[in-house]
Length: 95
Ligand SMILES: [Cu+2]
Image 1 (tube, protein in one colour):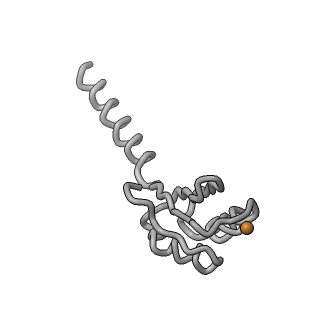
Image 2 (spheres, helix red, strand yellow):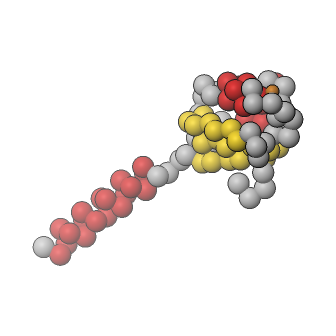
């Protein structure tokens, strides 16, 4: 009986680590956001890229936070995308 329980626990562990595996989060500093419409452009430049799961832009703090799959897209590609849209960005340290 004890063995059965530990097998179940192991299976559960494996499943949950798979579920929480990939998505990484990075925060980009976007200093050139100057008006409340800028976040819309920045969101559009990132949203829809392969590997990008979620984008939120914080206008008062001039940051963009992106949830992404690092097996499909790199942080360099993320900063390139905002730059192409007219908003050069840098990766915030520690994120
Ligand atoms: Cu603007």
